[in-house]
Image (cartoon, rainbow, N blue to C red):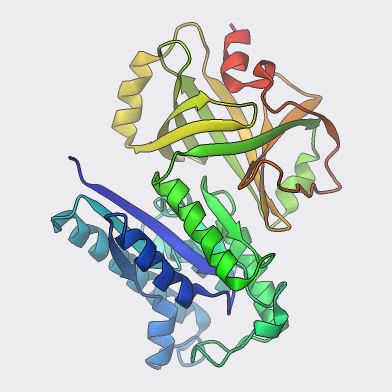
Length: 365
């Protein structure tokens, strides 16, 4: 059996329940055969040790040190996991590299990445999934406190602002999940475990999505939003048996990409069994040799938008100038969808084969 190493981020605003969540994660996934490793939160380690933005020369000086230490810690954990005898290893990062973006200017963040010879897209997509726990200051104000973490000093207002900035920082990741406070705390953590189980493939990987045709959106408005990220996607379909769909995807921007292979099988209008595997660039290029000659590659621009703790994907195709496709992934088929008022919904096309990417790929011939 080949070794499986998954690296995920658990993040969130101040007083979101991360500490308790980490205990739940250890209990839940140790029982399913995973060796669970935890990369401790770097900021808490540094600040409680006396190294903080207000003790260093500047916030930039502090952030350089924090990001370098965090990156080195993650590499140590990955390399150590490769030497361990267990077949299934889960690395939980208590906050990830992209969290740091919320605590400095965009120019500072990009300067530090350049100093470390890294780029944002490859760093962000190096994590298999990101789980954001919403701060108690948003929807559970009576439970917000700063007393259980010596490194936490934020007011309720600042906690909400940081929570929004952290969600915006991670927007664009292919597997971002926002766990809000619409239920009590125990149910919140059960939803986290359920989402994580799905991503790790520990249960039948149903993908519940709803799809809508919308009026062509205001691109300038989308690109002006902090909580919206543009991603370029090149999707190629491979030769597969009848009833199955296999595709490879290049995803990224500005010359920096991540690569995936996805198998899909429709089981109902809204439910899809989907299994995804990360690829190296060479594996991706090799699989392109197995492209289905009956379908052309799909090229599209995707805008990932977080809105009201929901994650929307808006796909812009080069052959449509009057409409676009909006998708949202749900936990339950009947979950309420709260659309931004700026979108004009023309019709729902969930389950309509005419609007599947594989159909559009065939129509381009």
